[in-house]
Length: 210
Length: 210
DNA sequence: GCTCATTTTGACCATTTGGTCAGGTTTTTG
DNA sequence: CAAAAACCTGACCAAATGGTCAAAATGAGC
Image 1 (cartoon, chains in turn blue, brown, orange, red):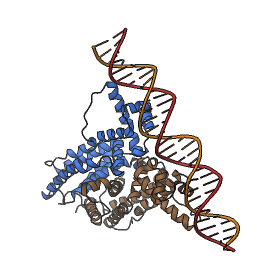
Image 2: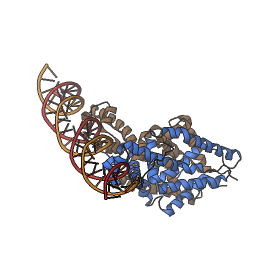
Image 3: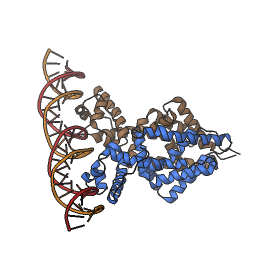
Image 4: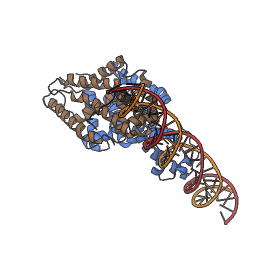
């Protein structure tokens, strides 16, 4: 599910597999695994169902391939959090990366959400293994910053969840946000506003400083 | 979609409709509209598919009924935000209500998320109408608090989104949270920890006060 | 207990769905 | 350019799916 060996592929294979995975991401993100119809992926990818099944033997094979390609991109930003950096700088950069991800790959974000909401049947091992390890590592960083007096001493897990939740929200609930504000995270101005408000609240808090 | 007139119902109808809606909430929340099988709702509700269809003529009818019952509960907490109250008290109470909702009705939370992620096809009018109106009203409250110097002057929309996102996250991403922490929002201790961290961050901020 | 309305069932149906396969077409390779 | 490999198609299939219907079983009111 994580590392993928790359068999030799022709140019045609390269192109068609990419088209399929791209189309599949769209429908899986929208309708989940069970709600997605192979036919629709095929037509979105501009090819016949038979041809699609020539490249990926089954629906679940497509799903796994999409997820595998997604996980690394979802995780990447957290890896960049530098223990030796300044907390505010580091966390701001992290939040900005996550917001960018929501803006640039909203479908990936939604598919991830969908998979987790269904109980993470396909990626449970990743969550419990590599992700948990990474989160523990970064939680340690946060605790270290806290004990050095650089940040307030709050539960690192909840802090991480707050960042995940808020940044992901802009992708996952895009239709709601659009309905309420008329704009969305894809818009540069909007994204800057979100980042500004988010970081202000996170670092300074809502109550005016004395 | 919002108000529902109640036709006369026998005791049996009352009981069976409730059983169906309850089962339907579970599967719709997990698999979305398209991914849900009428058969499965029926068997979860402990009755035959035919019998289920005697109560609700079609799959989409069940879905609409479930959503209608859900929206009010989802919205209710925001309504309680009192303009004349103390911002910290009011917002803390709001967050606590939302966390409780995530704890007590995680499936309702997930179904709402699912519907919105699919583009809110069924509740778009509610989002653009009543919800938008309510949000504007409460945004005004926040602006008023800001201009009175009671809270920092941040974008009310993003502030509301932050609260929605963080509180909802505990229901929607429960499997991930469980995998990472071994616990979840249903646990009293955990929920108190979440509330504590959330309110501290939101009101005081992450950076230590001078 | 009798009658009528409500509730439940199981058989049935058309359509959709994931997937197979034999054979045709295109591309690559020697 | 010929042969082999890769690619693509359409017909086909079994199972699943949403939904119908007539008739049987059950319940309520007298």
